[in-house]
Each structure stands twice: as structure tokens, then as C-alpha cells.
Amino acid sequence: MDKPSEEIKPGRESVLEPPLQMSDEDFRSLRDFINHYCGIYFDVQAKFLLERRLSQQLRAHRMRNFRDYYFYLKYDPHREEELNTLAEILTTNETYFFREDYQLQALTEEIVPEIVEARKNEPYPSSEKSLRIWSAGCSSGEEPYTLAMLTKDHLALKRWAVEIFASDISNRVLTLARKGVYRESAFRATQDVYRRAYFETTEEGFRVRDEVRRLVTFGHLNLLDEERIKMVKPQDLIMCRNVIIYFDRESRRRVIKSFFDRLRPGGFLLLGHSESLMNLSTDFILRHFKHDMVYQKPGPGAPPGDAK
Ligand SMILES: C[S@@+](CC[C@H](N)C(=O)[O-])C[C@H]1O[C@@H](n2cnc3c(N)ncnc32)[C@H](O)[C@@H]1O
Image 1 (cartoon, protein in one colour):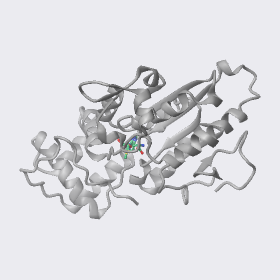
Image 2 (cartoon, protein in one colour):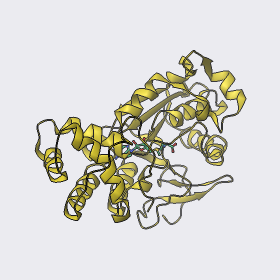
Image 3 (spheres, protein in one colour):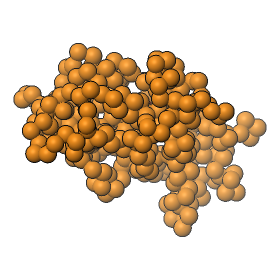
Image 4 (tube, helix red, strand yellow):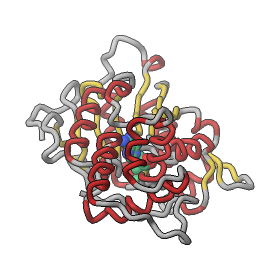
């Protein structure tokens, strides 16, 4: 399993103050609590990371030990607020536009045309059809905006509406995503043609144009919150990349089951390049496209065959 990374969280870790000591028992209590809350799993090698990241919270609350912090997270009336902070400091938010371009090529050249074909016999005109995509774990918005740029003028989607729902557990990154202003590093895999067409230059950086922003709706959602996930509309495609790699197997299973339930029959699930459903689910069909392999829920348009 991938380990939560050592990415430094802005303004969160003090270089001057050493981390407080966490006992093995407190480590286990906090690890299990965090895992249950958001799926992220810190194994014993990552104890120092947890110690370091949570030390600042103890100091902020003037607490002397991790046991007090654990009880605070569990029982305090302000625990919801603290859980939000926890999501900010424990998640890894690395992302950029047009990440994993071979998968995006499969999406535009093969998957979107297949979806359109599979839905062609629906009893209403294409002007009333909408393609729904969910970017689950969208971080600061580069992924859903990429999807918006790729589908906006897609020929197969002429007269279709495109609705992209983008969610994350961290309010900090969602605020950045809604703002939609990016610096140079977000464009490391972006062709100039997209930057010219879909961004305007401002003093703060490159701002996503309104015609692209309009296609994306952002929402705060914990992927382990099964009750709230039931409220997500049925989707044609779910993209969840580089999110569940930080989870333990049971949390991954739960999330994949939720995705299966939220997909339309025949809908697609796109994971990150190092992720697979091996040992997690046999409900999906593994499709071999020219550019990438992706998962599909059985249904219209899906080939018969063994779920993998
Ligand atoms: C490494 S980023 C991936 C961003 C984007 N999908 C990509 O591949 O470029 C992982 C994101 O997953 C979010 N995340 C982690 N656990 C989550 C959970 N339980 N529910 C929702 N989002 C979560 C993090 O906040 C973070 O923004």
C-alpha cells in the first residue's frame, strides 16, 4: 500500500518545534480512528509522520498528550471542526492538469463515443441528454477542469450537456478549486493549445475561463460517508485517481462498492495508473482499450464476459 507522503503542509509544520512523543498505544488508537474516519491508513513506519503532523494540533489546543487529543476527536462538541482540520493535514493533494494523458486519450477517443452509442436509443433527444462524470478526490480542481476541457467541445457530445461533479474531503483544496487560479507547475503536462483556449492571465496566475468552470460543481464529500454518497446522481463515468492508494483494503472495498452503486449500468470507472481492483471487487469488467485499461459496470454497451 502507498504510504501517506511526507509532503509539507503549508503553515502546518513548524521547523522550530520538535514533535511531541506518541506512545505506541496512542498511535494505534489514532491510526484506527483516522482510518475509520477517512480510510487513510498509517502503518507503523509512518508513525513519525503522524506524530509530526498531529503535534501542531496538540500545541494549538494546548494539550499535553496524544490521548487527550484522541478523546477530543472522539467526544468534543467541536469535533466536526477538528475532523476537517485533520483532513487538511493528513491528505496528500498533489495533482496537475492533463495527468496521465494516455488514460485521457482512452476517455476522449474510445470511452465517450461508446457511452454516446450505448445511450443512443434512450427515448429522448440528445439535446436533453447529459453526460455525468464524477471526479472523486479532485484536490485543487485540475482533474475535473481537465475533464471539462476535454468534453466541452467533443464532437460526439454535440447537443449533450456535460455535468461534472468534483468532490474532496479537504475544504482547503476545494476553496482553491472553486477559485480556479493556477500557477505554472499545474501546467507541467498541458499542451499550449489548451492553456491558450481555456485560461485567462490574471495577476494571481492563470484563471480557468467561465465556460469551463460552468461545467463543474464542487462539493465536500468523504468517500467513506456511504449515506451521503447515496445522494450522488447516477454517473456515466467515475474518475478516482491517486486517492484510495492511501487507504487500507477494507476502506478501498467500501469505496469501490459505493462507486459501483453510483454508476449507471454500462458506466466506467477510471483509477490511477498504479491502481487496480485486484482483491477488491469482481463486479466490474476489465476493458482493454487502445490507450489504457479501464473498468466498466456490466450493462448496455458493455461486452459480455467475466467480471474481473
Ligand atoms: C493525491 S490527490 C489526487 C488528486 C487527483 N485525483 C489526481 O490524481 O491528480 C488525493 C485527494 O484525495 C482526497 N481524499 C483523501 N481521502 C479522501 C476521502 N476519504 N474522501 C474524499 N477525498 C479524499 C485528498 O484530500 C486529496 O485531495
